Length: 116
Image (cartoon, one colour):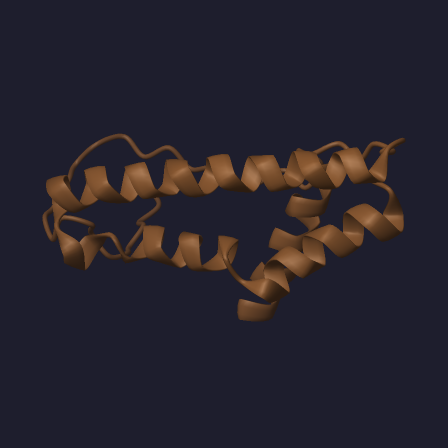
């Protein structure tokens, strides 16, 4: 038997089957972006959609679990608005001429390693 510990979102105890997710390093495929400017526009459009989704999730979670438990969504939004984060993604798209998904995944991995 393995024992997992961590902070409970609701400050309660739960007894259920645990599903453990381990990220596969090759989840996002790298592909060549034939039109880099179109890829940059695609990223900008996706960023707007993602910020809207984060805001809706934040508002829903705020109502359901309270202000103390929604900081994770604020953190994600801050990342999506960070100049360093955004510039890194755009730099990868433009310099390596790759797809948006790959640039976001690489940037996320790089930032994750920095924070670790």
